[in-house]
Length: 217
Ligand code: CDP
Image 1 (cartoon, helix red, strand yellow):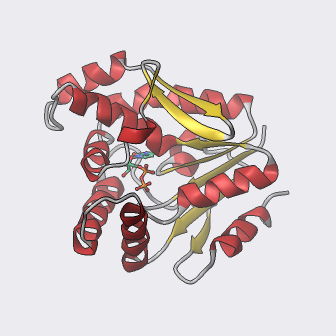
Image 2 (cartoon, protein in one colour; image 1 turned 90 degrees about the horizontal axis):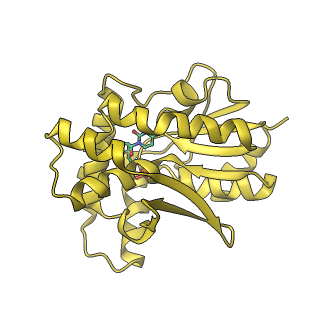
């Protein structure tokens, strides 16, 4: 199977880019962030707070996360329920990076992600795909952009959805999340040695997509 791993910080454009690359190659797109987000949502829904590690792990272990595809769009299911509409809030984003530091939580998803890569040609995005989940991926990309650019992109995305949040709040959230993701002990976000570094601050979506396609042999 042919596997493309795309890692990078929040708002770097990974999901937009990964989706387009997958479409062009007729590969499946796997958004691992949405899997972590579903687990965070499960915890929030049960009133478990991020510091209650035992409870967090217990909820995650008994939650069933599945990715399915309907009309070409990826749907993430939590215990059979489509939770796509609930997992993109700032509250869930913050809870996600808080529980993603626990190795027991990461283990719940690791085999699932590796299994998918064994069965399908895919583009998988996340934080630890090239470094940890798929160390033998055929193509690895570390996609980033300046904090200002990333916050602005997320701000426009939220505004389009009608969410009332300031650019400053988003910038703060992104910085906190990046710090936590890069400094955790288990599978921190970092560029894999053999990953191609792409800074998308001054690149169009098409330019980034084409740069990645050019790496595919
Ligand atoms: O879309 P955005 O970049 O804001 O976030 P995401 O890709 O949906 O990931 C949300 C959070 O999940 C990240 O901040 C990480 O804490 C965690 N995550 C992770 O630890 N490992 C992954 N492979 C993917 C996401």
